[in-house]
Length: 234
Image 1 (tube, rainbow, N blue to C red):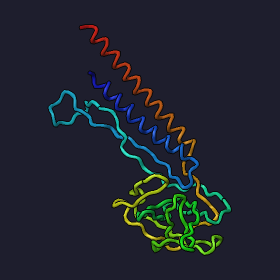
Image 2: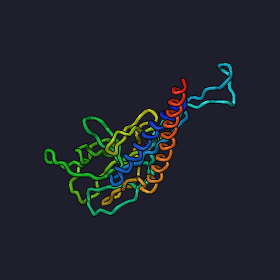
Image 3: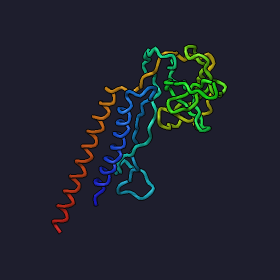
Image 4: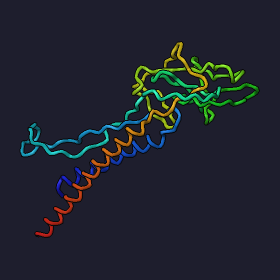
């Protein structure tokens, strides 16, 4: 089988993965505190043509493309005034709330909090019951929900090293460094941060991926027709 068939098929498969990233962004366009993902692609290995092995020439044959990585775009989303005292929004792009559930601490931009009453104490929690933590890593107890709660705000040396866990949450990793409390950070009460997804940008991205997918699909079709013609000559 000629290499163009495999090269184009590989490109089409990888482009579909890029479309999946876009689809996930669009599905979360209304999710509070969601940060958009951005895919990037890389060329697969090139093969030198008509030269001894191990030498480098200008005449090369490519082998398609692959989804190289998916980055999180930590841009600030628009802030919306909800008037709800248990809602909090961060005003800087590289800051996070900390929540703890089942002994695991994760970080999020979503400040849509609620109250959980346990043994007469009101604790600030996320929608799934995860406890909101303060700057000391302790659960936030609230005496009066109208008063500003001492919610912790954290940042990282390298936010790009955070690992996405789903549900707008991230976990620290070696690449991100440990979470560090941000002194004097502002958590705006009565506000929420919108998703950072731009529908216009995502529509442009999906058109680009669609055109590239069409091109690869056409090459697969032409390669198949060529092989059929060659086989018919035997």
